[in-house]
Length: 400
Ligand code: GLA
Image 1 (cartoon, helix red, strand yellow):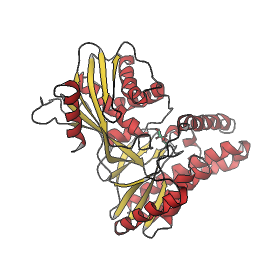
Image 2: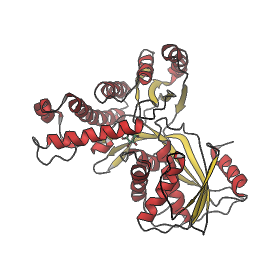
Image 3: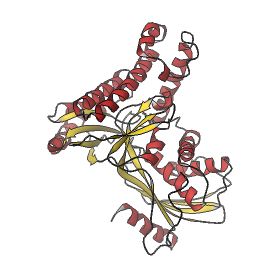
Image 4: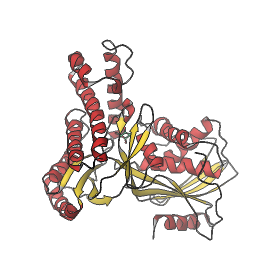
């Protein structure tokens, strides 16, 4: 049974009637441009064909009822008392989004949610952003809120920062809304200008989930961000008016790098070189130069491993196995790091061989089991028309 049908079925089981709205939002992988978004830099993510689905209906008693099929858990939350709950984390995403709407003066009257997904959770594939975006679109639709896509994306990002406590950038929420089938999205995080870049033909995109979930990831992520802020602060002595690492070139940095501590120097080197790689990757993809795309992905991984220090033994092992395999163009960790997933790009005719090798070699080298699956660049979030039997929603594809 597909995800949407199953979510609707579960909604009926939980609430005893049909939902009036169904929304889906995808996960993502980032082809390149890691830890650059919160430095005002460039990123190149793709939405993937794995989703969070929310079936819902409005209420009038200022209560939100949230049911998660995957966690087999239900929670009732009064809109007058929205506070984070460290014990039941999944609830904080829709709650954080409701909180942001209220803080911006929008009026919510309550809702029933039934949530189901097929994005591996806490694997660096952005299931959190998908849940935030799906929640935000659900509230927007149910309460007919006048908010355009860009503000909705920023609201979802703010929910993650303020309510969930991860000081993230805008990449995940943005690709979740704006993803396009068969394309990657090149985004300038300073201006928020973006363009679509066709995903090269003849290659497969393989996701390898290490199965490793790091509790410390949140604090380590926030620490990296603080280090970047500190590096900018120190660099303003030599480069007046500098506000982000995006605005210092490698030539300029070369001259002043000795002034920074070795750790900050490595962090900055990663960000500057990663931004350059994203620009080169986008050009390479336009020319269908898969060899260069792959090489830049591997360089990105090495920089994340050695300079930004967010990789792990397991992620490095996947990259090692992949690059030893014929037909593989590139591989790297994707997302925040510290565990989670790596991606590989491989010539279609060699995909089977790669998957087989990973499935035998990875457990040998790490004594862990893990999951490998293929994905395709997919469309962003969508209001799915409920089935015939449901009251059709009439709001056309929303105010943007
Ligand atoms: C997480 C964050 C993003 C981005 C990546 C690293 O996914 O949510 O904003 O910073 O890590 O590139």
